[in-house]
Amino acid sequence: MECVFCKIINKEIPAEIVFEDEDILAFKDIHPVAPVHILIIPKKHIASINDLEEGDIELVGKMIFQAKGIAKNFDISQKGYKLLIRTGEWGGQEVSHIHLHLIGGAKLSEDIRPII
Ligand code: AMP
Ligand code: ZN
Image 1 (cartoon, rainbow, N blue to C red):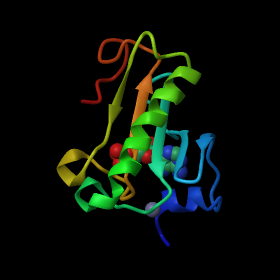
Image 2: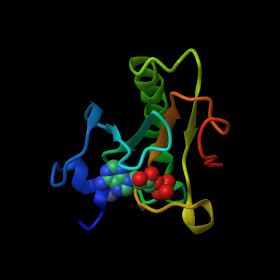
Image 3: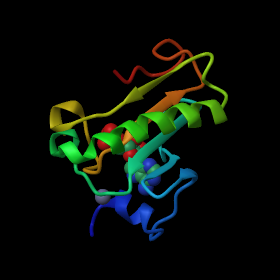
């Protein structure tokens, strides 16, 4: 499997993991755009939102639910944060394994480079 995020799931390449359960992995983005920048991914390889199937609905819900918990752990819940999923070429998706960006820790789009 050539997918870099599957390699992180399989512990073939290192990452700073901040949350893991049987379905979900979350780790620090290697090129953070804000003080908190976490990627939340399903352990199942799904290339993009375009490849979601009906059976994945609960999994996507878990990704967002864990984002809530991770935001709380990083103490950014109250001030707020952004969640982002890029899709396809025009959406700027670089890694073909669905990932939810959790971005916070600064007043976004004013203190840091805008990402949207
Ligand atoms: P996207 O542009 O939405 O596909 O986001 C891909 C993200 O993955 C970028 O923010 C990269 O910095 C991040 N990334 C790529 N490779 C790694 C890696 N090995 N460990 C952590 N983050 C990575
Ligand atoms: Zn993958």
